[in-house]
Length: 259
Image 1 (cartoon, rainbow, N blue to C red):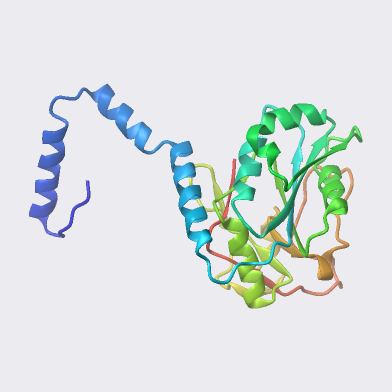
Image 2 (image 1 turned 180 degrees about the vertical axis):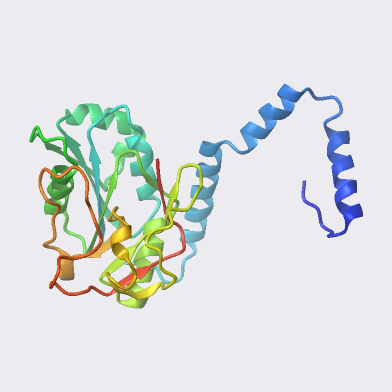
């Protein structure tokens, strides 16, 4: 219930109205209604529908030039959610789902309806190596967009997130866009620990604190970068010593959720 006023009496009246409305309802009924109202899937669908409706009337549409690579190794993970979240952004040209040491058919089935979108492409990679570097590199090799992004099959982005990143890249002429992260519970990931949002530098803005390279990478500038084969962890935004500091931008608009 929304309280229109700010006084103590306004809030007291609201409490009394809530009590009156719930007088004939059990605790279980109240809990069930509240759970349905804040169900994550319902909120996700409502947010997606609202964004797509707004995008229909966008006066200055973005170019469709972002390729996204999703590494998938387990059909029990919700790869369909990951793909669907990416497809809410119109700037996405293609989604490369790399089936890592697993049958493509199993991942395609797990993706459900999301697999039917013409932008979704499934690739198989069987290297026998327990490392995300292989499938990420395999997908990056297949990408043809002006920008690329990578994510895991158990991740998702909020509706329109990649459009927000792409718009930031366009406005700031950025070579990279560092995406804001939140855990599934809603808590913000506080890295990199900088207050700056533009012209970021690796050492000054402590970008090494962010080990997940989630966001956009411009192919003309960094299209040759690849993950170190066989390394299970240690992914980072910062470049090698002496290789120069890229022009980076961070965006506080829709972000990505990690689970």
